[in-house]
Amino acid sequence: MQRRTLFFGAAGAAAVASASGTGWNNRFAEQLRDDFLAHWKVEKQYSLDVLDAMPVDRFDLKPTPGQRSFVEQIGHYVQSNVNYFKALGLPIQPPPVPEETTPHALRSYLVASYDYVAEVLAAMSEEDFSRRDIDFGPVGRKTPHTAQDVFMRAYMHSAHHRGSVVVYLRLAGIEPPRWRFSAQGSA
Image 1 (cartoon, rainbow, N blue to C red):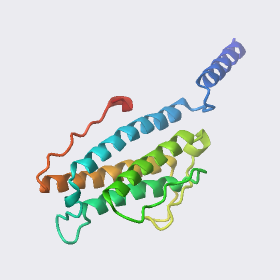
Image 2: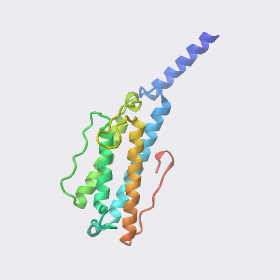
Image 3: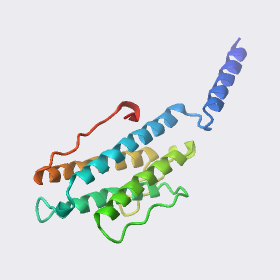
Image 4: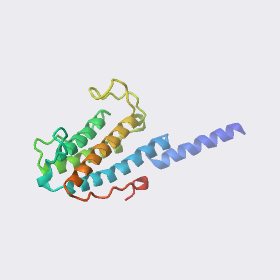
């Protein structure tokens, strides 16, 4: 009886793996990656909404002289997203950092950076997802990171800096766009 249970259990697991067609054995890990990707697309749109809410003539707004300007804050977090996901070492070409900080260049780079991260996420294998040896180089302590650390760093870092630029909007007298978090990344 035990052999029959083992056989049908293994056959069922193989059927599930082949039904998904992805080659991932760990469905939880794959679902976590897929959920993050879905939420990332929502975050991209919110970042665009925040960027588009600020009039171009206020892009240099700084709450205090020691802080980054609105445009510098956004440029910082979108470039960081690229750098976080470059650390995974997947063969996907990151977007080049724009040489100018015009509104059009910044918007294009924001879109390209979010798209780059989405492309990396979509291309990840289960082996990539399971890595525990990712080195961020000069960023932070020299401790190995996991792929999930990369996800969390990018998501939280973006939220942190985007939250600060929402304050910049308020300082400029602008009602910020409404933030939304949708279950399983749905709109």
